[in-house]
Image (cartoon, rainbow, N blue to C red; front, side, top):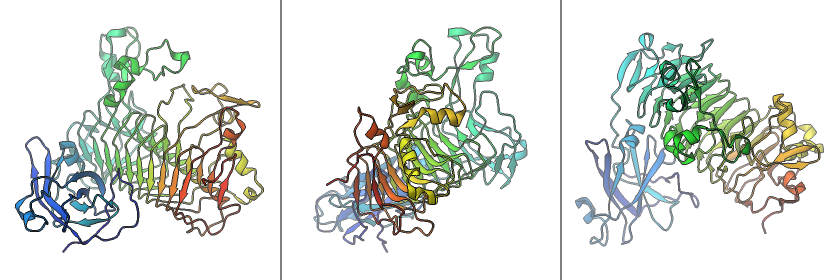
Length: 576
């Protein structure tokens, strides 16, 4: 018996409601495992009475729409024998083969394979094929390690024993494509001195600082690289009481002179003239384009709890790509999940991200990410913030904008409590309205371009640093210097966003889409507005123009607001 379920794919935007398709048939027939670690999914699919091929999509772990969907292909290869008598006309090919790399097979090891057929003319509708959920990817072979005897080094695939043990040390991966199954263990950093060369993270990469200091090499002959944690799998862990929860910060070390301490190559930006003559990490690697292969990519974090972390529960490192964070609880930290500059194509799926002091998910100069089916609630300032840091605190320029991100199918509710007044001109404007006096703890559900018009004076007051500044060019307005933010072509789709005390969504950059969201479920105090569109800063700065081309469609607006349910400010106007 086939069930008909609407598939979701990372790169696919669903065009409408999911209607069951009973005219698509097919089956997953065979799952083969090659000696090189690759896995091949083979089968057939077609639409009854139609010669044109259908698409085939795969999810792992859970059926669509909850499972993680990564792979899609067209069923137009030579059909396996069982297809010939079912597809019409039978002379056409309707077979498919999907190849999973060794890394992909490990990422979803031990999980069920669910498979769907989808017609090219309407990718919002699909049918679950025969044998969907019947095949399982092979499990990882782990070495069992006793928690009491373990030194915290992940140098092979490790499963901790016994279940739910306690560990009081930092965990370090010393190579790529390694797996750690904590088996319920708690990794606790209470009163634990940070390892040399680390940032005080609970789980990170092995640091080469000690190796550098033992070496007789100095100066330009001296360069030692931290371990590459690409392809790491971390699951069933609880991490608490560290500076960071998970952070695969990878650095290059050098010893300036004999007898001196090794230091990391600094982060310098060629766009920042004050550092133009200094050699940084980009230079020593041979150029900024080398940063993506240098940084940890393809990391999987599954069923992990990060709590009581001073900075970020999970910090996706700069230039990190294709991280998957799913089925985890990121609760009670400074920031929940931070997607650092130049990172891209990461997926944050089916997590609880709650009660973090500042932001639930920070998307800082990070692009093409998917934030899907998460519960994001009770965070102090903002549920999801999309912005390009202006390069403060060291002047590291962000080259990438916070563009082309998708927020889909999330519940984003109840943000409020952090001190964010005066951070930007728009925030100051909203809080100065007469209606805002009724808001005790301002918070925002989703804020696109959340640093539009960021105030240098506010930064200096907030940090106590009078020389903070930014590497971006600022605009002088009055006695302050304000900075432009960039976050466009983002899509907020099919979310439930409510009970965020100031506004459910604020949009301060162009070309963003807000479609088919439900803002009407609120039971708490009325927000100032459901959606705010516009930027006071961009209206006041003569060289800029008001925010435009923000597309709204099919949204269910809040039942009660203190002001307009959709509030246009800063000279912005609705699209005709």
